[in-house]
Image 1 (cartoon, rainbow, N blue to C red):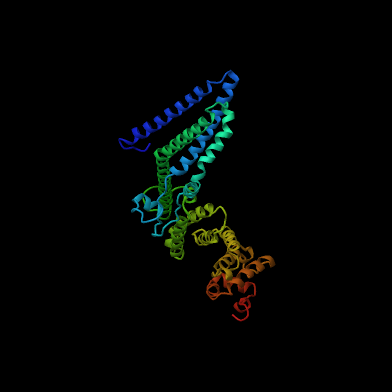
Image 2 (spheres, rainbow, N blue to C red):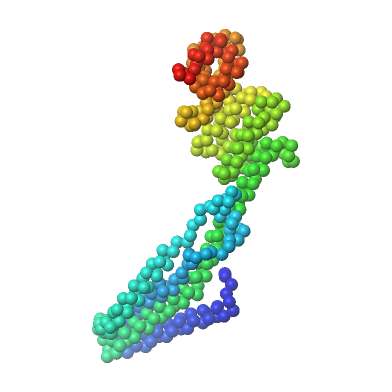
Length: 399
């Protein structure tokens, strides 16, 4: 519990004790009043009505006390400087502020609205209160036994229990509810900080594993594919994007030179982990980069590269609409050629294979960069010669 000042706890407990004692006195007075009944049935009837009226007045006063006692949340004006933990929970690494949420204060606003209305209406109708009390006494008096003092007792009981209910609810709200709300807000902030710190640990673990995979010379054994996939899947989207960029740049910088091939091949498990983490299968670049890496490794996996590039093309859609260069189609055509038994025998491809390769090459020849790359590749030009195709026949009209 929140620590209290030396005088706060005794004062609140003393006040609540006095009010509880007054309630006990009020209940005793009801029994004493009902004891004047001539028989048991009359006693039970008047006592029951008195208790029901007393409880109703107590609840009504308690509701008013709760409305008047609800603490207000400070929401405007300058806020104090955040602690390092709060800055960690509220800021992203690039300094941008993350979306935060305020406490719902609808109850406070309703309380403020109702209290102002009640006070305003009460002040305007204060002259009618005596008549309303007399009407109440005339209505309740018969139920209290209709004794000579029943009407006076009804009014006194109404005021006594309403005021007691108001004070009990008001003091409880002021003494205890404010502290409970503060503790709840503090717990929420602490939970947010702990969640953010946990996410930072998860992201750091994923980045550390990826670094160990991409840089084999680092200390410690490289994690297994399952361990790497699990760590990457748990990371945030921003961290996954960072991991992708790191692996993509390493593949791009090392695929051409044979001595660098081992370093390029280390990106393969990273791309596989990124694909496994993409449960909705929306990122084509993961498949495309893996396809490039499988094709360029020392022992090329032509079939695996073809399948990954096919998936990348499906997810990307039309290359013109995506604003990308059709490298996927060109490299897939290279894979098809390498997998073609007829090409290995230095003969023309069958109709089905020729159609698949030609379709990819037609897309590649529609862009200047991939067309130049295709013309400069010996395997592609050799296949074109075997199948009677030329650069002009594959280039769309007008290009």
